[in-house]
Image 1: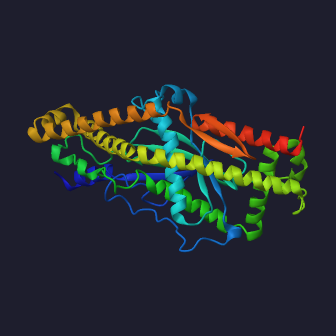
Image 2 (image 1 turned 90 degrees about the horizontal axis):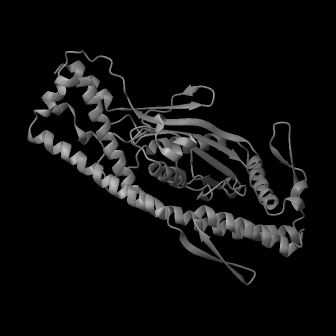
Image 3 (image 1 turned 30 degrees about the horizontal axis):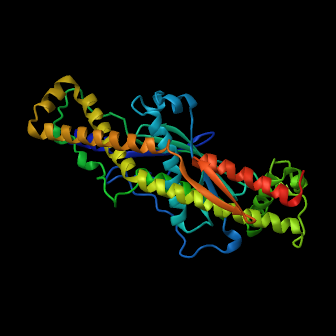
Length: 401
């Protein structure tokens, strides 16, 4: 085989990563995925040896991701998601991806509490919204929009990882053999293997850190203060509506503050503390899902990697080339069977996991002022019940109409 062909085949196994802003495409640092061994250098996560001072600790909420196209979410048949990617896969992935981002942010030791939530929550200092734009196992693209409690936009970028599909330099008469298709280049699936596309999440974490470092201590404290006020407004809009206003940029600014010794402020603080305890419980639930999803998600990535490489080989080989590959004997049959076996395991495990999402969570028992309440249903349903309960309880306690 010519050296040019070998070089081209190696290029097909490398991962190309690009990030683009809402207006124009930008290239992220090299190595935005570890999906293939010996890929470009990995993105180094900016980690702090010691956590920042309290006034610079920003709490982060990450609602489960959304799917860009609602029809694709329902049917899983849109081209950007691949015909073989069902709605169950999309539903699981939209809950799994924010978990990887959450764990990456925690590992950086740069932030306060980082929680995955069923929906957006105004009580958090910084919210990170994700939208899956493209996903078929071999290609992942999602948009990240991060805004703090004031309405300041920290990020609005698309992060993508894909296999290079360029076939430049391949002559029509080049001959390919089975040895050119090496599935060992795909990461093995085990407990120690890296998360697929983990460098995308490292890049998101690093980009967020860059923005935070441009803000003063006073600005960060203001973000925390406004998050507290917005939570109070969420509890009782009529009571706290006049505490904030918007400036010319459309950002929230403090109009007035409650006195520190105001009993109403003490009640708001108490409610917020209870709310944080509850969303900590929700976050623990999502961490449990991460443990269940992790192994099968890595298996899906492994299968998709092999599937993608084989399709590349088929396209380059043509019909005659595939005949030569088919003549490879036992080794060819063995590799094909192994990939088939991985696919069947993946389908069985994923279908089983998808069914578990239709099962209601265990009821959550909460106590408010010596009264016990039971929350039932899915994580989203329990979350909505909790917020309604907290708001109603505050109104009763403070005689709010």
